[in-house]
Length: 556
Figure 1: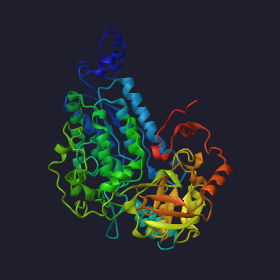
Figure 2: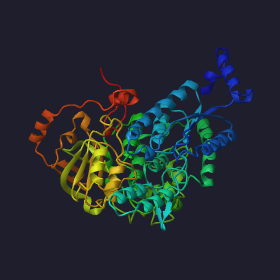
Figure 3: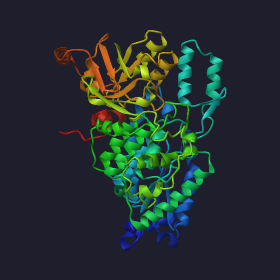
Figure 4: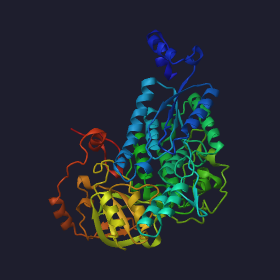
């Protein structure tokens, strides 16, 4: 056993004295030591129930003959961090989570791991760590929140942010906003639409790293506790068979996840996280590669914010396995990939049934013949940009309008709420990229303000920052290269005509090459916004959005 490095032999006598201090029995010292990475905390609604998930995992591990040992991972609630300096500290935690979990696993020589994540950066961070550590690992998330109900309609966090915009527009009273406030988030769990957390938990299942139901079983269901017990048992079977994350997270598995991503209409953040996970297993790809997959993958789901259905509806309809069965029947998946069940994708989904063709459209009746995400390139984004195509209204799929340029999120929000943005405008928010932020803030507040002001079908937003999975409309993020490194988005001037053509995968500023070259010659790098602490170190190491904002050691 790997843990023998800290348990067996004379040289390990001091180690055993410390295990004695932990209360380990002689019998436990003979068994595999299974690390359970608990992301439990009392500030993230999606994590407040993880203590119960962890306890269930412990029971499963112990029942299957292992010794469960819990250690923590951090997690940020993006909703609470939104709209202030806190959002600079969201994306950056992904790499902190991966790094700290790597440290704990190697320092203590665990034989296997069970990861218990739930919200946004916590999931990809632990998937990255799993790839690095490469010991048998199973994921079990905390599960999604149930949708809220306001005036007879299902609602979620995205409707809450849009309610604030409607109040600014004078179309919703403060009392109405208060009703939304009290009802849209009724339970623990990751927010109830196909936002980033639920996207990544579903893609964990598609990758083969989580058991059936990992992405969709609601947080408050007893079935989630059963799933956690089975995850604890599954990791012991993986240990016995020596099935490791890099056996599962192969290039073909990454391609499966990208395909499921397109079918589900996942958050644009998946185009940051999947490349980062792929990088850890040695599969670096240009994000434009996703267009090849999107071109042949039908979009089968319109969950909030793209449509009126929620994670609980997807779960009842058959969950991720039912979506994968639809895709496999078209020959779009690599079904021979091994998974944490010890079985192949084909074996896992063979009995899956689509129980609600309104929630999961059959492949012969999709919402669209192409996938939910698109990567746009052009002279404004030579290295790419990302849009959630499935959440864009038809009239904004092709659009031209004058640039309204803002150097930060706060200035843009003030202009939107102040009535200074008109139908047809293209809002450009720059210097919010991985380096420029630093930290690549989410722009849910401005996109929600645009929707709340009644401009969602006539105004686009372009940024080198990113979007919440709750954002909808013509919201184009991850523009690369970013402004902070002199990318073309830094050269856009007020009134320049921006051309968006999502079907043609184009994002252009209608300015001549000569003029852009002149502007580039005059451009000067800005002083960093942050010069101390972790963000300063992060700024020096982070790459652009098109590479998943991965960290690289600066070359001397």
